[in-house]
Image 1 (cartoon, rainbow, N blue to C red):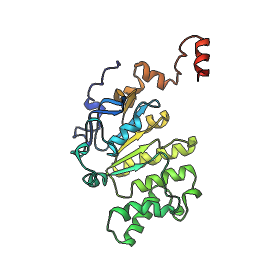
Image 2 (cartoon, rainbow, N blue to C red):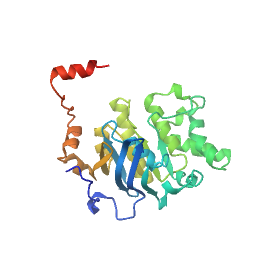
Image 3 (cartoon, rainbow, N blue to C red):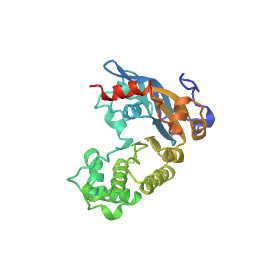
Length: 278
């Protein structure tokens, strides 16, 4: 592969021939003079799991926030279910956000609330459902992530894996069509991380959700993805199936997959001077 933008995915690289549920079109994000995302294009189709890969600082989380309609790009468009979210006001975005669920990297639970209260919060904030119905839905969501016996615990009483599962339960409270994950396995031991992978696969199979995941965990990525995209310095350098990415000969992708560090630039003296320079 070259550094040129990837060609549009072929029919073998997508789960069906339907219209994209999410379409990122020529998106540029600048913070001052610094370019974070550089003319990105990406289509995500109904029912597929898209994994976003790339090194630290490549723009993965910024891209995720564009698709979550939490930020607007400097230029370009993001289309979600036919709606150009970059052209809508905050008030107009309320309806489109109802079809999204977000599981944050830090879990973002309210420490003063029990697990059940955290999961029920979106229902209490955004619906007019009776309290008995909210409690029933909350119990169902906790059951789906294996936390039915922990509803009265507070976040400080939960393990890291339990907090991640609780974050998923809250993200699912409104029965979203799209579920976003930011580093779902970060900070977890391999056994707990495998449980999160299993949960994501279960959600996909049981609820036919469209899932978008930012992760550094290669084992997880190649297990759960239908397709993957790879960012480097704000550019989209590849989009493809697991096998297409795994077999890529692009130097940056090979370095990432083969876990090879950047070569030290310059001689040893120059390197030491750079480390000690104030």
